[in-house]
Length: 135
Length: 135
DNA sequence: ATCAATAATAGGATTTATTATTAATTGATA
DNA sequence: TATCAATTAATAATAAATCCTATTATTGAT
Ligand SMILES: [Mn+2]
Ligand SMILES: [Mn+2]
Ligand SMILES: [Zn+2]
Ligand SMILES: [Zn+2]
Image (cartoon, rainbow over all chains, first blue to last red; front, side, top):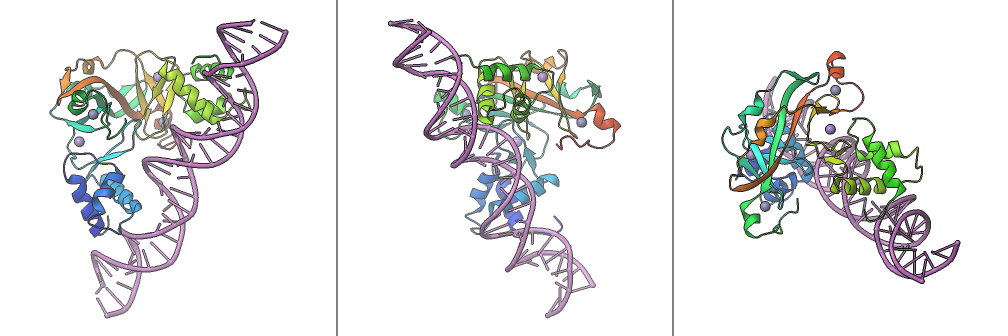
């Protein structure tokens, strides 16, 4: 990020819009109406770059493609088992696990990753996964 | 798993050997000396099948390829940031997070995934990642 | 023991997400 | 305004995982 680029500005705007935790492809789809000539590689590169500089957050999800988060505050996520939607968990709910020992199993502990798994309200109501996104 | 297969028996034996949490490719490499004609697809299919039946565990790791675990008891894992090695966390260390509310953010909570991130003893000593496996 | 039904396999092709390459363009700076 | 490294669009390459199909192996019934 040694200099500005219009593409990066637009990408950042679109990641920050809403709380949807979009994948690179979804960001690409949102950016394209505004920048019809942009390429997917540019989106990937800038998302990585923005995440490396702490402007956005990269979410590595077990068994799913990575997503990005415009909200860089420390928070956990919950994921719908049926449709794959990722939502924020508000508040300091799970503080206990932060009180970890410095070493464990002879590892030096640097951090942790936690996500909750559940069924989102929409999938619960419709009883069964909705068409959007299977896992 | 409606029928037996020799391939599946060997695959299971190799997953259970040691505590190494091998990837499908690693299982393939271990099985091949014993079954030179086996194909990677067969290894993937049987690992999925064994996991679906609870005979082994499938580990979906954020930002890394999936691994398999012959130990089906409930336990967490710690992962080396430098070399990617995955080790077991012994004991009921992190019980607090199991006391979760039934619903959160209007989701029905079914479970959680937690992994610790750290530096393994080998990587700490050699100061810097060892050649085996970057990330 | 033989046989037919069909589950499971081998080998290869395909898909999907991501990264690398490259020539052309652009933004910052003097 | 000229310079030049950073960035881009386009495309190729890679890696993990899945899918496809002809063949083989397992099983229950004879
Ligand atoms: Mn979030
Ligand atoms: Mn384990
Ligand atoms: Zn859902
Ligand atoms: Zn290590």
